[in-house]
View 1 (spheres, rainbow, N blue to C red):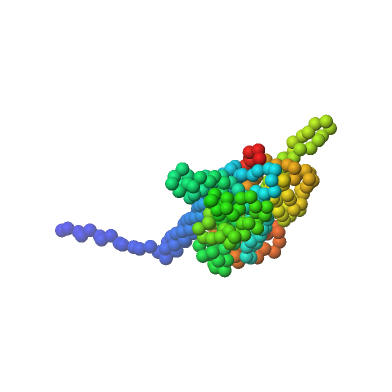
View 2: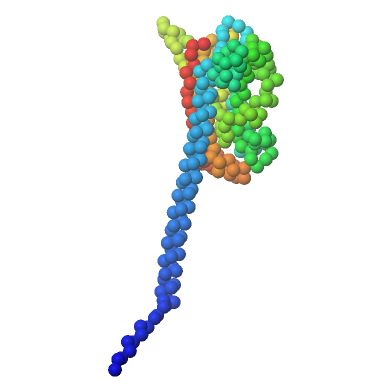
Length: 305
């Protein structure tokens, strides 16, 4: 007689085993979420830095080309460059927003159509740079999309020759164009919290029996040791105040040998956070910028003027 095989007993997980499995799963998921969050944050910050780097590099290169081709002439009463410090912002106010107007042989004159039928033969343009806190698309400072936007207006040679070249007051002559600088079509770079320029003026000084050439850095700004305004005229360089190491007369007789351009670019997070955050101390403000901004600078050597 055949004896039937004993059926196997099926048993499930005990409550204790389920609780242990759930606890292990919870730990693993928590670790994965934490690692993913850190990775996403690092990726976001890297992306913001790369984006800021590209914008700032492109903008610095553009300003560099304009300064390398800067046009001035001595022995006349005309004004060739006007530079002044300005401020802009809302809750977060830029402490340095340079306002520049000068003449240059820009290569993108006539919309870059040089040596074509659109090129009418002029080679000296007037260019202006301005930093303003507003929506780069809507051109308004009262929207949630407002940011520190840098603008560049290039006036073609024909209009430059007719209305701007040969004027003794460049800022006054440019006033007709001034409202157009911050138009949407002239927007070139966003999140530029600070746009700083430092002019290096070469002066001659007699030391003993020798005449020595000395470079004097003249930063544009409102702080001590800086100047709020600099003008290059055919009769010399005029400054609102003289920095340490030189007199106004020495600087007037000198020449601009170099210009250092510096851009402080905020990350998108930094701009958005600045709209709601209040800084109680300077140390807190410095920490915020150290974490959420990137600085790019370049020194441009100016040919003998």
